[in-house]
Length: 254
Image 1 (cartoon, helix red, strand yellow):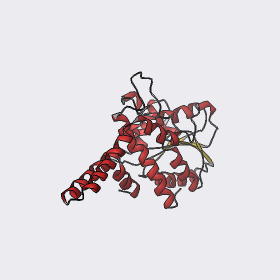
Image 2 (spheres, helix red, strand yellow):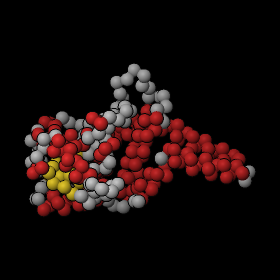
Image 3 (cartoon, one colour):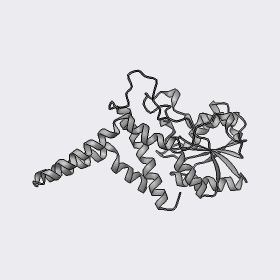
Image 4 (cartoon, one colour):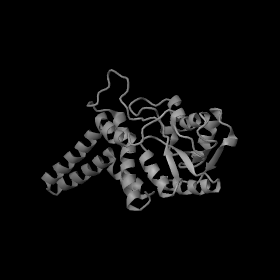
């Protein structure tokens, strides 16, 4: 488990609330009651804030807007398309809507659209088997085949477990292929960190990410200020990106 994952786990709203509540109980027992109440309230406020869609839309939306989405035929041409894994099965189209089987391949579909629009001659798929078994690169290759992208137009990098490794291992592959410029495909939320990593590796990358996922859904019952379980769930991904950016910057990776 890497540093970024550990820090993210510590500050995820429900995890932090549970930890602070446990400490608060112990402090209450030893009669440090004001401190105990303060910690419990801090955990409650942190969790409550992230349960509001407004928090996710602001904090996550800031990252998503750093590289605006473009239609496939408006994206510049390049030597290759690079698609990053990262639990691609969770890439639903909108974080505030239920996940369906038809909405779980945003990155791969984006790569297929770019390829079919003639933006690059081949696609590099990057991602190891995070949970054992088949690699994410292979999963994405299988999906591309179903989207009528020929296997001859795909290359796989099956060893990377982190974004930093995505950049490092893919950079070596691109050098072998003499690819000078690439279209980088990942989620809009992940794009700022991914772009920083690839540029640090000396790769000339153009952001060509999937459409933003943190958008107000077309639902009359949706409220930005009403606690929402899906907003609380999305907080993990948002916090992970901010923690990842901080950790990668501190290590000189981005």
